[in-house]
Image (cartoon, rainbow, N blue to C red; front, side, top):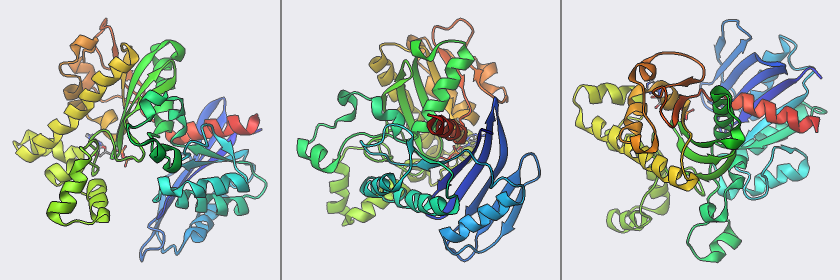
Length: 396
Ligand code: ADP
């Protein structure tokens, strides 16, 4: 086996891919994407190894067309041959899929059946799989579910206190998301600390445009902030996160909004954007530093919510060995990291300002030497995790 895996992430209007060789070390052989599928102006990007990326503005009518572009790009460097496996990112695995799963017709049907739980994602993921099964006939293909890592949560964490039939008949429970990222950074954090994952109590914070927290005991997720859908939990770029459910009925009655309008507003017009009309944290930090009160409020609501979850999850875990920051904001914003950790000295967390401000790559410690709990910055790599899980699945 060459250990070569193609990782595919098919969304409703994009197809992203990475070809990764897992031959002792991980080598990125190609990275690319097809964006704005089905729109008047599309973009195709391909980068082979360390070469300069090639970007072409090109209209791509549909997902079949997107795959044609990917194959063409990979063919140029012979990477469409000799694949040991293809790993598909699948957003929702429901209660059925708790492991990376070798795809056949039944699994594909199962992913489609879970569409009510992820209407924006699972149908697109399934379409990508369907085309890939034809195009890469004979290459084993694996579904890696974003919910799978959270399947170890106990019922106390995943059940909502609602009528039981909502759970049994309609699947209403906490599933979580970003599982691949939480799993990756938890392992990388243990490696960085030189300790066994099995002995660690971790809180991992995936802070990107979407944001979630996970409580991880001995490598197993015991609670996470996203719920039935990615709307629950932390304040996000455009999602509200936690909310009194009555807000939904209140604005329907008082503002005359339909359920669809409320759903859209809570997913697309809320979060940081709702508070300060912007969801790029770089800009929000600039504005706040210049005295803009809305931007300052957005940052403080964002950080307050995260801090609350860190405290709650430390309680769930019965203590904390390390707090891990990852994704766009977690990896790049010293301001957010400092503000989240402010006042958390009672949990043993103390940020070293110099280390926090340093611009370094890779996993690193930003807590003061000797503090009881470590604070880490760990770059996430979901594609690498999908590639690893895919290879492990096809090798068993
Ligand atoms: P996605 O969820 O879309 O994958 P990312 O993980 O790329 O998101 O994170 C996007 C967020 O990261 C944006 O809010 C962006 O402003 C923020 N971000 C990126 N770089 C920085 C930085 N240097 N300082 C603060 N925030 C940053």
